[in-house]
Every structure is written in structure tokens, then in C-alpha cells.
Image (tube, rainbow, N blue to C red; front, side):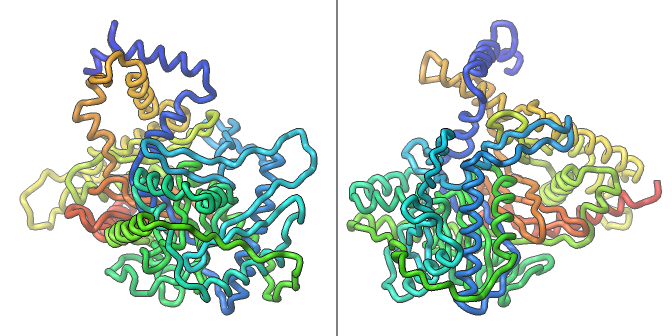
Length: 594
């Protein structure tokens, strides 16, 4: 099939010419194909399926003022950062390895504040904050944030031409008003739950809401806001109380790290904080009354590295120099606008259905934070191996130990060396990785099983070196623009756009079962490096699959592992156990005298 597709007179050559012509006309011929395929034409609900969650080191809040002060400082830092972006003063980053010094595209950083994903029946769209005119004029742009508290939504202007920029005291006073006001009100209709359902259903619900002027005004305010602040209630310690594996790490009022991560990923369901969310919003900062804090972010606007750099900057600013003094009186400011909705019977019915849907999704997520404390990247670097390559091969071995085979594996590789570049796919399930896994998984001599051909440590090390070499090449090819997945996607989309008939638009290489299997990622992985003790995780991308983010530290590795309880073949705890055994076995092999 491939020979026919790419051979003389094959359709592949004509499609390649189409892509080359597209390349001449666009800054990046691939990015819109990729964005549609990965996100905007994906109808799955955003929580669990798409939006990652990030956990910050918990704070110690003793009063409601502590909550308001900390949150005000994060908002103040966000406004300062947005002003820097408006002046286009963000330094250009450069590659530090693999042809170091190449400038990296910074476009993602400019899409974080003020952006929002909007649902569509066939394709979602994105609201991106307009860039200020470079001609100057000196007038401050209007900026506001939306604050969710007890499912109530409030609009807090933080900068306006007629009153200037609010200072930290003034923002704090606005937040104190919200924290005092929301608990006194009757429970509002939790409209935010609608952002957590399938995209086409949310598009229908949003279209109905927009028939009313007040509702449309609310939706526009949310979309244009710098970010959403979620002032949460703590999840109970019993939430997700199934047996978990690994070190507890930070502990907030008896809550372990898994409990904290679930609050950031989905909020805990309609009875807890899921109605205190707007899952379409790129940046949702979550601050809970018990000191838990973190982030839920909509993934289509940017990759994790840009988001992490921003929110860690905001958190650091909030952490430094915090005062517990009450804000100075500010009589000139009106109270924040509470968003009220005009809802019909159909709207209430949809919200009720959304609550049921989201609660089932929350119950189905099998998730755990697993801290591997045997060693970290210091040992890995002593083996003269990239920590990313090492951990990817550990994940392959863990999967092989459970299932006796490898599976299509996705690891994101940044392509920011190219204008508007996002990611391509590092495929870790190589023949070399398989050969090494097969050797590593053979039983020891004292195991009472059928006699196997035993493999010496020398052979295992040789196979390891070949697997490392192949994984390293795969990684470098992708970051330098030589990955296969974006190119294949382009050829497939070119076939759709140039096909003379709609009845059979795709060449057979894209309809064959092997192509479907190659793109069924039962292992979806990513290195999510953070500073301090923050970490980020996400759900699986397939019903029978795993999500596995990892964060290598000097002496340990933080994994966020996910699966679905509804799958009979997956288990995050079994995967964690297999991963621990694999990492220990790898150290044992690599620590032996050569």
C-alpha cells in the first residue's frame, strides 16, 4: 500500500506537491491541520479527556483574609504579566541542546491570558485576546477577571481607562466582597457544568443561552476575561479513597496528593467544585479554603511548558512578601458584578443532564500520584542517558510486564523551532525497545515456571544501548521537524481537500487497520518538568488506555498515572507497581560492574 501510495504516479506524490504549495502560502502549513485533529474537531468533554490539572505546594490559610490576599497577589501578577506581553517584551527563548541557540517560537505565551475555547457543532473555535496597537497612545486596555465562588460567577475589573489599574489592596477588597457575598445567596443554576459535556451538546446549549441578551453578555465577559479564579471548597479526605501507591508528599488537612490533583483536574463532580469551573477557559487558577491550590487549563491554546512558566511566576509572586493586613478602605470602587442568568426549562434540563454526565466521568477516572523514591535524574544522568529517554523506556517495560506486548505510545515533542510550531509525536514503542523489554521480562532462574532461554546481563545491556540509541534518535528527529505524524496528517488532510469525490476521499493507507492501530495511543505520555514541588497530570486519551505524565527530580520521580475504572484491562495501581519494578530492575542492571 505504501509503495503504491508513494511510487511513480502514486497519489502520495501529488499530495506532497499540494503540501509544498501550502507551505509557500502559510507561516506554518501544518498547525491548523494539527489543531483541528487534536482539539477543535474532537467532540470529547474537556475535563478528564483533555484539560490537565496542576497542583501547587499547599498554603496555610487561617482566615478568609489569607485566601483573599494570596489570590489578589496572583491576579496582580497576572495583570503585570499581561502588560509586559502587551509591550511585546517577553524575551525570546533559545534551544539549549540539539543545535543549540535556535530561537523558539513564543506565540503560545501570548495566547494564555484572555483566551478561551468556544464550542461548535462541528468544530470548536478559539477566542484570542487582540494584541494592542503598536502605534501607542498610552491608554490602558480594559482588563477583567472572572471569579467563581460557590458556583456564582463575578466579573472583577482590574484595569480600566477611567479608573486605572487596581492595586493589590483594591483587588483584595473585591475578593473579600465575593467571599462574603456568595455564601449568603441561594444556590445558583450551575451553568459552568455545561462546559464539561461533549462539545456539540455544549454548542447547542450555548446557542440557546445566547438568545438572551444578558446571557450573551455573560458569556462574552467570561470569554474575554484574563483568566478565571476558582475559589473552591475542599474535597473531603474520603474522596477517591481507594488504595493508592507511593509516597504521600504534601498533605493538606489529611488530603493526599491524588485527592489534590483530582480537585484540579475536574473539581470532584457536581456536588463539590465542578460547577465552580469554566472548563473552556485557558487558565483557571484554583484556590481552596484549606490551602490547596493549583490550575486547570484548556489545552488547545498552548503546551504545558508555557502554562507552567506563567503560573509558577504568578504563584511565586503571591508567595513572596505576603501581608495579612486588611485592605485599606476603598469607597470609590463599586462591588464586582455578579453574573445572573435568564434560563428556560430546557436550559435547566441540560444543566441537570450535564451534572449526571460529569459525575459519571469523575467516578470513572482511576487516577493516582505515584512518587518513585528509589532514585531520580541524578542517577540517570550518571548512566549517561537522557532522563526523558530513560523514563520512556521504563514506561515501555512497565507496559510490557503487564500485557506481554508494547502499544502505540504518544510522547509530545516540542516543535517550537518552527514558527507557530506546537508538537509532534515521539513514538517510543520501537522494535529495539521491544527486544530489550522481552529480555528484561524473562523470569529469573529460581522461578518455578516453564524453562525459558535465559539472557545474560551483557546481552540485556547491549539491547538497552540499542533501545536508548533508537529512542534518542526518535526524540531528536521530532524536535528538529523530522517526525512522521504531522507529515502523515498533512497528507491525509490534503487527500480530503483534493479528492474529486466525497464517497472515497482517503487513500487506503489511511483506512487500513494498521493505521488505526498506530494512532490508538493506549499509552499517552509527557514529561512535565516543574520547579519546586509542583506537578501536572491528565487523563487517558483512550477508554482502554493510560495517561502517564512524569516529572524527574534529583532524587525521585513524580508520576501522575490515569486509567478508567470502566476498563477491565487497565489499572493505575497495577501500572504503578509494574513501573516501580521496572525502574528498580533497570537500576540493578545498570549498576552492575561492567
